Image (tube, rainbow, N blue to C red):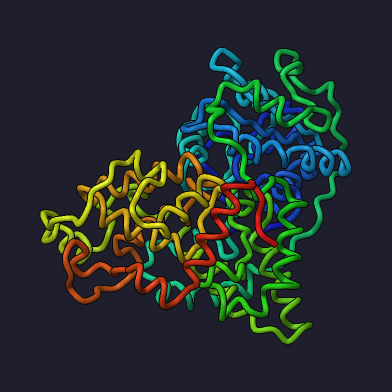
Amino acid sequence: MPAIEPERIRLLNEASPREDGQYVLYWCQSSRRVDLNHGLAHAAWLANEAGLPLLVYEGLTCSYPNANDRLHTFVIEGAPETAKELRAIHGGYFFYPRQTGSDANDVLYKLAAKARCVVTDDYPVFIPAVHNARVPEKIGVPYIAVDSNCIVPTSVYGKREYAAYTIRPKIHKGMAKFLRPIEKVRLKYPWKDGLLPADVRDLRTDVEHVAVAKLVGEAQVNHRVQPSTSFHGGTKQARKHLKKFLEHKLGRYGEEKNEPSRHATSDLSPWLHFGQISAVEIALEVQEYAAEHSVNAASFLEELIVRRELSFNFARYAERVDSLEVLPDWCLRTMKQHARDERPVLYTPKQFELAETYDALWNATQKEMLLRGKIHGYYRMYWGKKIIEWSRTYEEALETMLHIHDIYALDGRDPNTYTNVLWCFGLHDRPWNERPIFGQLRYMSLEGMKRKTDVDAYIKEIAYLERTGKDLG
């Protein structure tokens, strides 16, 4: 039997396995890790069953939207670990960074031409979603997508859920089956480099012995967006942050998560987004630590599991993730009624991007995005609400939020991103008291932020980060 649950597996075409295939190919698109990777585990099982070795292909093109040094660096920093771990279990690894528009763009198809079948990641947005819609009919062999994003796979629900309270009982029910470790990958048939197609063999990059900055610098991407001041890619870095969170933050997370100056959150969203750590691993580690140390982890697990998986449910079943049209009727109705309301001040998208508003707190949140590559979750709500208040239209506000995330955020282009942005417009929320511009949408004010959080401490911290390039503490 396969090592993973059938609910995680989708066959996206009707092709037959290649009888003379020389390996099983796992195309790593979004789960960029070896441990607790359901896609990799399924590919390994198929390889063992067929009596073949396993080849893992990880590509990084220069032509994805808003490609830049920050995003490129984070991905490449994780590749040496993947190479080393796959070599240790006798798997093949082919990392191909497409550096310029004139470089080969058909490596996947050439690798698939010698494969028995192709296994990949079932990711509901961005480039993997595009690939998984277009590639299966061109590949000539079975194309199998595996959900390794969530604890409870999104196929379980079968439809879009309305809010957290509707999906929560289904998740809690599913956790008994799906929240479990999977066996370490063991390959029966070692990989041999001679199996690589001759016309792609020389394109492989030996990421274990190449300077990351050099590889990024030679890529045809936006070099103005520098790597994060605070976060570095790779599973080791993710586990380092997880360990720090467990030992120093989990016990106070419930009370202090909405106070940015207290640094009580896990900051794991960049590694979750790039698939360099599994939500299953995080949840299991948190549960174990909480049990051993008598810590209440319910608040964190609610965010990690229920809220995050609600966003994946939305991304999987909504017609679009980047449009106001997918919002509930009450949101569309209230925005229509207040579309012509006078705004207190108007800023252009460029002014937002450069943090050029009159509001010192808002400017600090945007500078955190520019420097670190993410904004504290509670202040990101305020960040988004003010963009609505200071934009000409709701549509322009949405475009600005997504544009900034697409360029600067290490946790952008993600179901969580789209859901959190659309939350600012009422998604997964409820109607509130009527007021100008927002109508029945939830409103957030600077005065409220000052009452609930230490605004001055946060502004000083971001100023220090901007001045020194270093985090406090």
